[in-house]
Image (cartoon, rainbow, N blue to C red; front, side, top):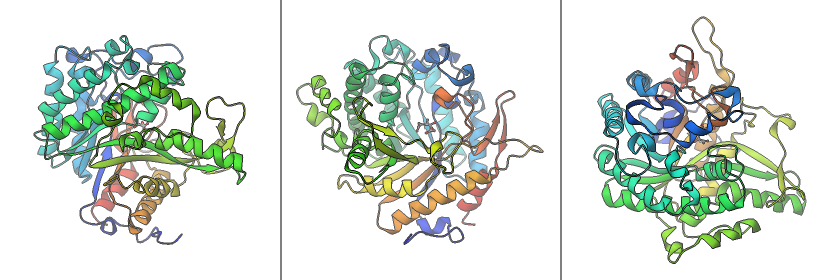
Length: 452
Ligand code: GCO
């Protein structure tokens, strides 16, 4: 492929001196201490307690004990020479009931984490909402209740006022497509709601909150760069038949355009007829309120999807040709290892003139890592990261304004409905003992960052 750097010449310098390098995590997936020091219940604390919802009956109550071991984990980041650390704020640690009284112990925790990052020369990057909605708000309708716009405004304001003096890189939301689709349509993520009656209002209210969150941050932290993140997968038709091509376009609209386009002022994509019902949830002025000119967009890509037309699949009339049936290399999530996917997604998101800058805020892979002689060798993850980085560089060399790359993720952690089984970390966790073991992929990343 033209412009694609080879394995041998891939090194940090090719990305430029100003390129940001980091690692990403999320509060619910790593913190544990699910009811410590005044923290309230999130929808994931409740959903995970329901039988059959989480693989192996796993629960995030302890996770990686980051709440108590944050210094050790930030020390590892510093020792690996990873410059930036992206983490999220647990809404219920700061506001146990979502609104009302602030939990000072929760603010104190995040101030300790931010201060410790800075003391170790690690730049803190903050995601405000990474799926852990307060249960108290879910009981009032959660993302289906338009009042969430004011609840979210309050949460963003408190975060900006308490952390904005030291944190200058902010993401308002993590992957609205996933938490609304899986949590409010398919019912496989918290809070387990299903159907368009939940999905459509959740979409619209998440879009309104994303834009409003951006406006609040810009007003309260004028010197910060403000973004938000989107999941995405390169979508290809199973054949060149017009019905498969049309099906792929509909899936691309759902997976890759549904949230970025309204925020850019382009309105909701019209390819999926079932989405037209969103207009029912509009109020006067929403067209304007949905828009915000983010300083950057976080692109989060792992794989690609192959789509065929499927008459019997409701709403979208398309089905995925599963990677495990396509004789391709897979990760432990059964996702295809397909590096060009990140290239195509960078080109697609960069093609919007309103997109000023892109960071890859998540990319990584789960593999069945094992400990041998107190070490974890994970060559497949190293190969995955190299392959995707080559494609990021290919896009950058072709003029895409991609300015950073964050690996998902620092430590093995609670992978939502899959529990602790999938291991995405650069650092292995023995969940019995909470012992950390730096994997060979972490050492590779450290060498890469040293310019080796
Ligand atoms: C997401 C979330 C992460 C996941 C990661 C692996 O993108 O779904 O941001 O929380 O753990 O992507 O699935």
